[in-house]
Image 1: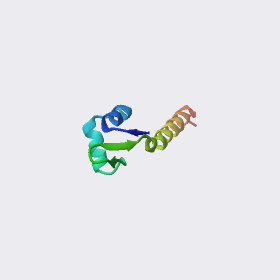
Image 2: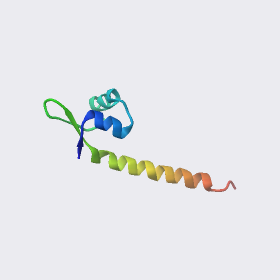
Image 3: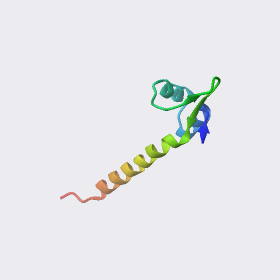
Image 4: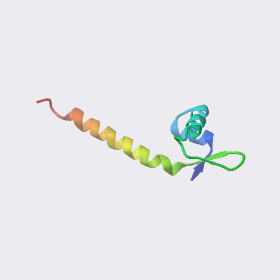
Length: 67
């Protein structure tokens, strides 16, 4: 599913300006159709999975007793 810049900003909880900067820095892949940038939503799926794994790792680490 493709999102516009404003939809992506809402999805990522960023401003439109920040999303545009990430596109121009090539940190977010986007297609330009001549009028609008279109961003594939699937590129964020792996990022969110990695964040969840990291949160679980930190939670397990913090639950471990101090020797």
